[in-house]
Length: 544
Image (cartoon, rainbow, N blue to C red):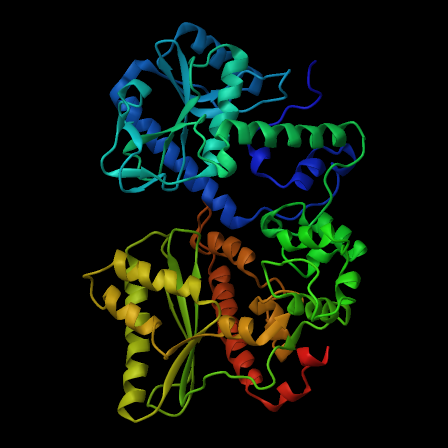
């Protein structure tokens, strides 16, 4: 029997509710969230990476490689791929695999490699697919054949479940079309380093519970196919909304958020797996969670203690953004203080380090400073701006110490700043003004570097999230730009440096500088508020 819907490989790693919404005819005209700029940049980088791999391979195999055109209709791309497989073309790039109407599958694969009795699928991805070690089966990039695979003495496989599931989807399509290599299902992945193909046995019991990648794929795909078919035919919805990590970047989040708020769903205050556990014991709403005894857990939770979950629910019902977990706040302060905020663009680099100096006089003008590069990332000028930032910060620290004054620098969520502090020291080592990795590690592990996010996490319960844009307004801070936010800043950056073929926009550069300045002002406002008498009037968790 032919399936009424046909799904690509992405559905097996996608939220079930999203699959429903994508196939519900009633949702076609419903407004969705704008695309995530970070995700768009990752896709663009991945496209460039695949193009570079194709160029390298074509330079070696020449006429043995057929690149399926991308500027023709999908049906033509499938026809060209099918004809190439029938003709036994050794390498087919950008393959659009024949649709599988019985299985409900559609989609393509980056590379098909002809072995003596059939084709094997190969993915090209922009992430690491192996780690130092041994045991992985690899073949050289420029000889990407399964018959050339050997046990690699220098690499072990880095587990990437998404890659294996995508390969399983392609394998099922090849089998349905009669072009799969007989025997054990196998697929390859070319990763970020683009020097070898790492081969995966898709029938090896390497998944939890002894499952194979192929079995895991089959179970997931069958489930998603049922969800999509029910949605497409107006049947009962097989997937209900629940808040999970994926919601942050999902275009359907405005729809689900509205539904969750109407139902006062418990996932609005606890993480996804905890929401599932609570629903399993009959606690499906925030109201039902708030009514529980904080001292008597009803089911094990992994995201937070039961008592905190109950208090969070009670805070949510009272529309309290934050409540104190502790009676007395503990926020380290100093004579000389610097608030730091970094702006990066995806994985390409950090283009702006903003600093706000306040406190005792050390002969440096107090206020905001920006250390920026407006060359397109990645660029050499990034080393100059980072060196100037590090030199200024080190000078402030030195002057404070010489005068016998205490010094601290603050950020909000050190993961981002630490990542680019260490990465910049490593990438630009040896250049003028660049610190060593050891110097950076000494600083970020010292008492001089304070992560306010960690303090908020330990000393507050936050009913609506812990982001700076959520917490700082409670302290009385307002961003000047009504559209201030990380995702919007990505768009502004593209315009600021002229990434999309347009001239660089000075107005967007000013906008980014103002946004960054407001971020450090918000950080200062937050820590001053947390050490003020205002804490006495903030609700205490013990009272809820």
